[in-house]
Image (cartoon, rainbow, N blue to C red; front, side, top):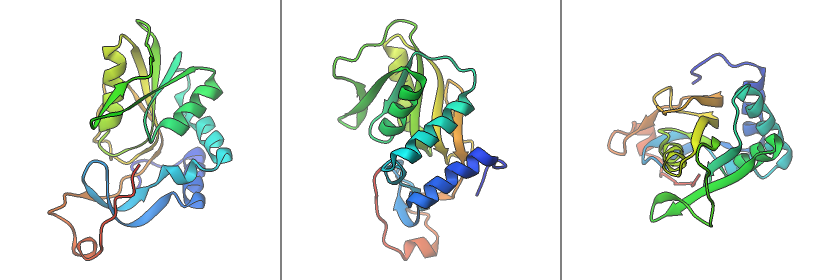
Length: 194
């Protein structure tokens, strides 16, 4: 289900997801705890550097005039695409990683006061990890400019304090564990990881 009309770059990106086997169908438990019949396994598309390069190119084209010095990505999902966006834009690359189920800036990474930051993530449903990364950038004195994602599957429900730029907007129904439709309830759920 699409939230907006697809243009040629959107369709090209979706084709790369399909060709790489990154768009899965079955019964999945998402990181948010919700269940879905569809899952974007971005690690599948990110195995192929030619695809990663093209996705980063398409994403940067959508970012247009946004100015940034540093790309910040939440681990694990945003690492590969974040690093490629940083490489192509000749920006510094940082990542935040999980510490006791919360993201943290570690490894001696520092953010300068007012440093312009682009947060890059692979897929958002509710946007929790992306929001955490934005909050960390602000807490450390940075100035987040935008959030760039490969796939926004939030159906417009994910809200952020900075502009959201997505390569592909798709919305598939999600369900609480106690409100599954019969066809999903009859299928064993898997948690494939982001």
